[in-house]
Image (cartoon, helix red, strand yellow):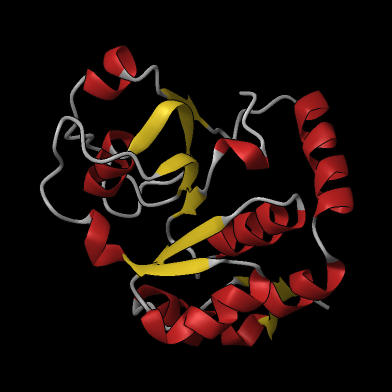
Length: 185
């Protein structure tokens, strides 16, 4: 969409999750000022270790959204959806863009058209299910280049197949950070 580090900060929601953690690591390596939004402020050191410049409590984005709020960031990566996404849009700077790739908080979007028609904000939908293989290959090549391997190791936690059920409960309780990989041998 043409955003560069000079455009301004980028906010990442669901920051301690798998998508958020990778987004922070990649964006920080590319030189962006990254604002991590999380419901677990206890993970602030982890998020800063991945490259977040600031860490904010998700409560800042959970109130009733205004059609337009004070401009705070040039763009964002949202894995939460619903009210959080509506607030991100209302706080995005003129000409900014938000990539929506999740719906942890819901599929609704309690927003108005104000960010789109008064600030030229773009909402970019990210689909990982039906994405053509050519685009996947390009994305994988970018990740291979733009994702620091040491940070990927910090993000990833490997478990055995017999640990899936207990870890499923931990994931649902919000007790897991980063990405869980199930090792099948």
